[in-house]
Amino acid sequence: MSRRALITGITGQDGSYLAEHLLELGYEVWGLVRGQANPRLSRVSRLVHDLRFVEGDLLDQSSLIAAIDRVQPDEVYNLGAISYVPLSWQQAELTGEVTGLGVLRVLEALRVVSGVGSSSSAASRQVRFYQASSSEMFGKVVETPQSETTVFHPRSPYGVAKAYGHFITRNYRESFGMYAVSGILFNHESPRRGLEFVTRKISHTVAKIKLGLANELKLGNLDARRDWGFAGDYVSAMHLMLQQEEPRDYVVGTGIMHSVRDAVRIAFGAVDLDWSQYVVVDEEFVRPAEVETLCADPTRAREDLGWQPRLKFEELMTMMVEADLAHLTRAQKYDEYSAHFEW
Ligand code: NDP
Ligand code: GDR
Image (cartoon, rainbow, N blue to C red; front, side, top):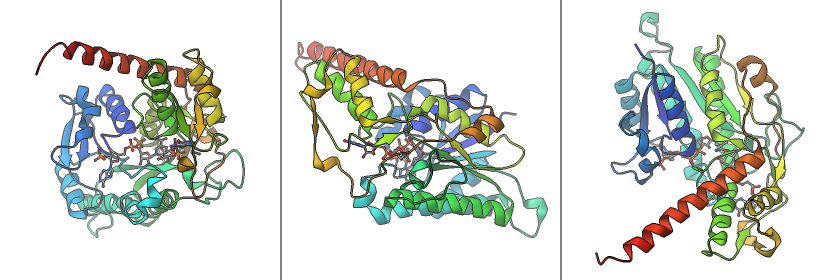
């Protein structure tokens, strides 16, 4: 019988890559979706015949209990979150509820449904749980590179909420003997990245400029440095973390940093344009408290999981620009074509 996985956040960037990966491995894959007509389901539309969906919301404990009871998963991947850092200052309480307490609600649902911690050991069933922790928990870094033992100093309500999710996952592992682990993932990107995140904002705007649809790119801090990798590479690490003998937390990243300025230079270079002619620094995109640098030490993931990133940052940015160019060109052709008809 095939193994069954439940993914929260299936409509997000990582949810779509993870679903593809697990389907390829022969899993029966279920996605938790909120709302009856979630507009972001289009992100997984090409998989719609292979996936199964169950309704639920990280804000609603009873919906999570019902979802886990219905699916009876072997593995649960909790990717759902408010994940855009600037939004977390505007909606700090909601971010705490979804990104922080949402983790507790999924763990509680698992505990209740699988009978973990109950006096009857026969009722207890081991479900493996993955929590999407984040390098944003390191925030104001105390050492470089950051490993599983580096102290946290989060710099946004999002980072603080993720730190709660991280520690409650560890606490359920220690309290109830659950196989519950956190992947501390550094930034990972792709053509499916949301348009608000800096790499995709850059690739999409560069493509628009190249096609004459925009004439400038407004950004915040060009000196911020991140350890950026390809999302398609990172989802296999999530799966591997749930296949180990002992549950452990892992840092996942490339170990190489680039600045936002580097990302801009590579993206404009990919379409033979000079970035300095188009980039404008706008205070609107500068954060109340910035995370200046992040760089992973992925030694444990390499040694225990045999995990390695494949795509280099230059290749990633170029791929994203090319994907946006192709997408916008298709949309332009469709507009020209449909202009010939009266609807
Ligand atoms: P996205 O922002 O693309 O996706 C977020 C997902 O969360 C969406 O599917 C969204 O669903 C869902 N969601 C939001 N609110 C709720 C809710 N109340 N109940 C249920 N689901 C909800 O994130 P990514 O795919 O980029 O990231 C996946 C996870 O990994 C997130 O937890 C993120 O914080 C974390 N992470 C991401 C990194 C990255 O670089 N991408 C790095 C480290 C951690 P809906 O369609 O309903 O809005
Ligand atoms: P981040 O990603 O906050 O690291 O969180 P984001 O791409 O938003 O920012 C990266 C860095 O770029 C700087 N920056 C800008 N960022 C945005 N979005 N827009 C701009 O115009 C801009 N100009 C400069 C930022 O200040 C920042 O330093 C992502 C999310 O996916 C989180 O959910 C995840 O946990 C972390 O990565 C790891």
